[in-house]
Image 1 (spheres, protein in one colour):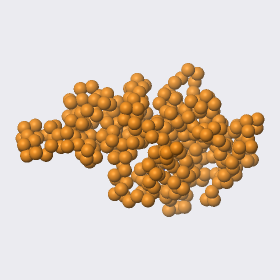
Image 2 (cartoon, rainbow, N blue to C red):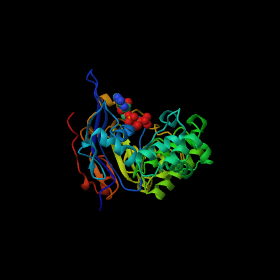
Image 3 (cartoon, helix red, strand yellow):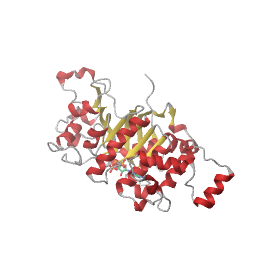
Image 4 (cartoon, rainbow, N blue to C red):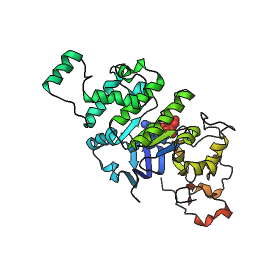
Length: 356
Ligand SMILES: Nc1ncnc2c1ncn2[C@@H]1O[C@H](COP(=O)(O)OP(=O)(O)OP(=O)(O)O)[C@@H](O)[C@H]1O
């Protein structure tokens, strides 16, 4: 079997604090994203989803990062120089953030912003003959005749923006919230990446707009053979969109596997709690933080299972380790009490917590 597109193994991210109360935001996270799949990273606020994603892109200058492996297409991301990482960002891994209004440049038309990525990616012929340059400068007064502009308009059409010629000449504030998110998706696609990291791309939108964008993402994923690491706190979004899911809690992975398996037979008490917290019949939009209690302070994370204080099944064993169980080749959970005794607890592999 070929290597996954993205491999994260035993990732730990700590934000040092001069007063000694370091924040351990991510603690031993492993996940892998296969080419062309949509992989959901789900968990309640503060569970470390964004920090994990930003670490993959090496966007966190103020953090101490360690991992036994952090690889994209088999290449070690931690060994890359900043210049090499700039090439990875955009060309190899595109990004879509929650708030397009602050991510997009307010004084540049959306078409120019997409065209800039196309030009940077360098796979268009800008037809730089003197005649076309003069035409560009004196007749159109803009870069609208260039191949990168035409590609930008095409991409806006691809992501479902009506009247893309007109929209390309507009500024971000002239577009609706949903259209701006689509512009960010078009901009991410402009570098022709193999992976897009989308951090809560639809959270700020209303339900129908969100549904349209999620459908679009699925179609784009298939049409462009691009994988998506989709960060969300919404299990409905996961159900609707993702092939695989990694469930995070307080900086650690609690469970990961195919979405269908996890929804049909959740194996971690935390995942079970999340699924139970969705009202009957609800499909989306449900906040996850409905399990009684709160997550541990990341400046003082306990050893063992971070969920134990909220877990109805916690025992003494949960205070010292977080064992991994393989329910199938793809479906794994991290819990002393799963699967139940009659489900083959002999498979237990107990990995002691690292010293901290
Ligand atoms: N630059 C930073 N300095 C210190 N702590 C940070 C920093 N960035 C994030 N954290 C902390 O790391 C933890 C994980 O944050 P992260 O943003 O990854 O959570 P999240 O799961 O993405 O939550 P949300 O859904 O609210 O975005 C939080 O406790 C957060 O306060």
